[in-house]
Amino acid sequence: MIKATRLGGAEYYINPHQIESIELTPDTTLLMLSGKHIIVKESAEELIARIVGYRKLIGGFKNEE
Image (cartoon, rainbow, N blue to C red):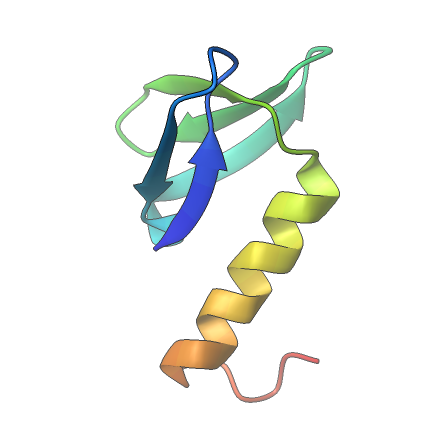
C-alpha cells in the first residue's frame, strides 16, 4: 500500500495495483480500476516513486531500478 493525501489533508493508503492511470487535470487524479477518481496532493512523480518503492519492497518486480 502507498500513502496518499486528499486535497482536504486526510491521509490514507491505497493499493497501487488498483490504479489504472494518473491524470494531471491540473490536480493529480488517480483513476482506479473500479472507475473511481481520487484527487490527491502528491505529484505524479512522487506517486510513481512510491509505487516503485512499494513494488521493490514486496519483491515482485526485482528488475525495477
